[in-house]
Image 1 (cartoon, helix red, strand yellow):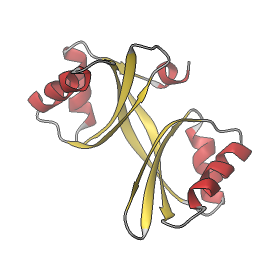
Image 2 (image 1 turned 180 degrees about the vertical axis):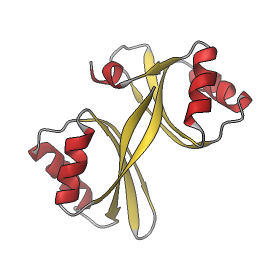
Image 3 (image 1 turned 90 degrees about the vertical axis):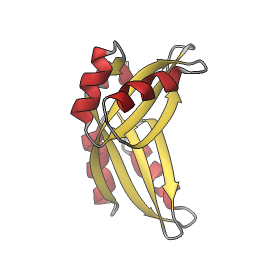
Image 4 (image 1 turned 135 degrees about the vertical axis):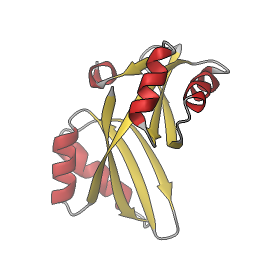
Length: 142
């Protein structure tokens, strides 16, 4: 199952990240996980939130450039080699990873890897065939 991720472009200047967080908080949107990548002039904030439609609307109304991206969240054992096992599955399927970030899950022995694949459907097929637990919105927001 694919989930929606928000990609928000922001200037690489003090206070811009807090402005995004303030906008979300003021509208009751909680961030499940995020990743921030930067260059000299701008950053890309990637967010997973429960109410992504509301978040996108409020951020756009506040003047931020927001793009939606489909990503795949995979639950893995939080142990040495947990990520490697997933990477071997998608690598064997010939799927390229555009980026990945991780966070720990509600259970102490599990983690979640969030992937942006060049072919998410092919990646999903390979992950499911290998018995990997691909998470959906309900799983992430319980």
